[in-house]
Image 1 (tube, helix red, strand yellow):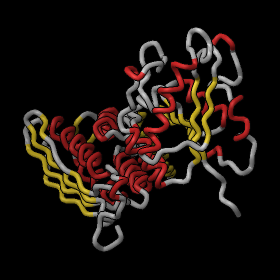
Image 2: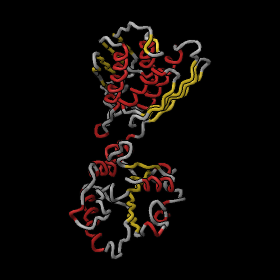
Image 3: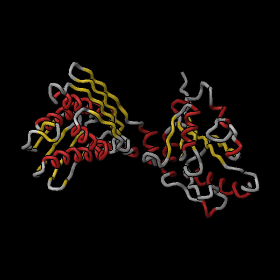
Image 4: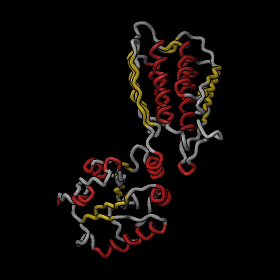
Length: 359
């Protein structure tokens, strides 16, 4: 069975080249290439099998407001410069209509792209629109493909190359027992968006530190038997979170693997971790209050032990200081920063970080 062809529908202005205030690249002094486009688009062209289709609105091209002779010299220079970096386009679609024309040919309409739609040889579901505007996202919806929008949610050309080459690191875990009903979703390449509800306010606050400071999108919905006590809610949430992180890491190729650090006010908290595939916890932190918020301090150790076991990672945690709240919050923040370091991927050295050949 022949593999279906994937496509990158790539915007021009604001995506390949910077867009000036008047939205017309009609002279060479206005021409600037976007940061990271050469290295990353060249890498994508060399390493992956996407068709490259440029799709651009050029309002009124060929009219008095935008004469052709001011457009083509810079456009051809852009194409020649990209070609010199190994970046060529299989097709180029340029629409000349004004917005008020309401033409179906103009993005986000799909009039220019009918030859790629409803054809079995193209894999639109796994194709992408790369752009910088909401109309590019709408075009992706209209085509039935995905969107990568620059400068939204931390999206850069570096991130685009990483996601296309190594894939998204998103995972979901659901666990239902007689004691708890838990749903966890993680995106390791997120921006720190959190939607967390466990029924324990302080626990929610701690879990949010992992997302915010680890730049991990994190959804955790836990319904536990809090009428009994907090134990099952905290332990089972840790298990699900660890399983979700492990699942999202996938084959672990290109990751840094290790991470560590962090001070917080009167406290010094250190969290070192290793995604080496072997669970182990070292815990050197003492708490002298029975609870912080609604969370029993005896459950701190239990949370990190369950997390370490489920994620199959080494965790070495040390904390010193006098303020119990600061101490545990510092530990969660240090864990977040350690995670951020350890899950970072390098697609230019896309190897397993192990001399054994497995993790």
